[in-house]
Image (cartoon, rainbow, N blue to C red; front, side, top):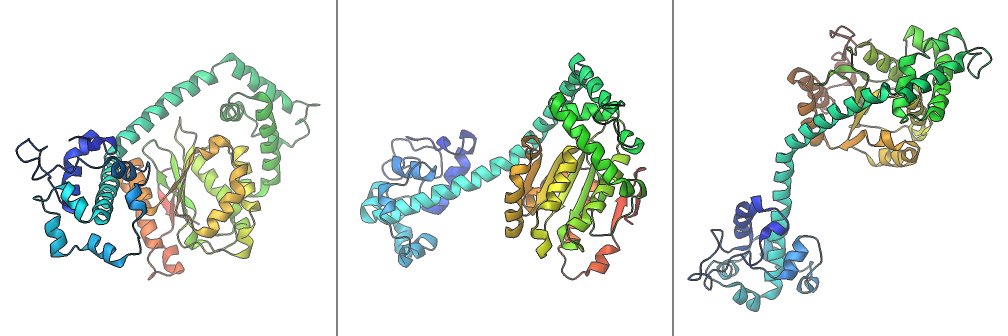
Length: 407
C-alpha cells in the first residue's frame, strides 16, 4: 500500500498481482492491511524501492548483485522451499524479520515473484488488448482509404498522371517500347505508382519505366501463365476486407528460389484476377517452417528481383506480408536484403511466431478461410505426411471464388 504495484503492471491488475505475489513469495493477498494486523502480516506491496526498480527493469538491487546465481541451495530453495523456509515466509512473519534472517534469499525471492507477476500480467493485458488493436487498425485503414481517395482527386496527381502518360508518346523515353508493354501503362497504374511514392512524379516515372521494361522481359509468362511447379504457393482465400490471401510453406519448396519466380508472378496475377471492385492489394503469408536451404538459396538475387517487381510492376498491390518463423539461415538472408527494402514496404512486413500467426489469421479471415489456412499449416507440420500426400490437398481459389486444383 505504500508503493502501489500499478507502477509496472497497471492499476487494473492490482488484485491479480497481489494474489500471484502471495503464492510465490508468501504474504498478504487480501485487501490492504489495517493498523491492527499490519505489524503481524505486512502487505507485499510494501517492498524495498530497489527490488521494485529491479522488477520493473530499471536497475538491479545492490543486494541481488551479490547473490551467486550458481548457488544450488539458493536455487533449490526458490523453487521448492524447505518446511523451515516456508514457515519463515508465512503471513505471520514480518518482511523485516525475513530480511534480517536471510537477506539474500528474501531479496532474490521477491525479485522472482515480481518478475513472474510482471510477465504474466503483461501477457494477459496484451491478449485482452488484441481486439482493441484490431479495431484501431480497421479504423486507421478506413481513414487511410479516405485520404487516398482525396489524394487521387487532387489536381497535382492528375497532372502527374498526364506527365507520366506523355512518356509513351513517340519521341519520348518510352515511345519505342512495344505495344504489349504500353498496354500496362494505364491511368490506373500511374495513380497506383503516385500513391505509393507519395505523389513524387520523378520517382514514379522511374518506376513506370522499370515496370514496362519488366513487362516486356516477362512477356511469355504473362501471356501463357505457365510455370514450373516449385512449391505450394497459391491463392488460398481472402480476408474480411475481401483482399486475396496468398499462402506458401517453405517445407514444400521443390526448386531453387530463382526457379520459383515465375510461379510467384502467376500467383499474384491470379490474386489480381480475383479482386472484387474497390480492392487493389493482397496479403502474403510466408510460412518458413521446414525450410531447407540449398546453396543457391543463399544468393539474395532472386529475392531482390522479386522486391523490385513489387515496387514497380506490382506497385501498391501489397497490403501486408506475414512471415511465420525465422530460421537462422533465413535471418542472415533477410539481413542482406533488408537495407534494399523501402521503408513503406518494411512497415507492411510482420514477423510472427506460429501462435501469433494463428491468432492473427483467425481475426483477419472468416471461419472458412481461417480454417483452410490453419489446416494447411498443420498439415505441413505433420511429419507423417509425405510431399506427394500433401500435394493432393493443394487447392487454390479462382477468380470466381471457387476452389480448383492448383495446377
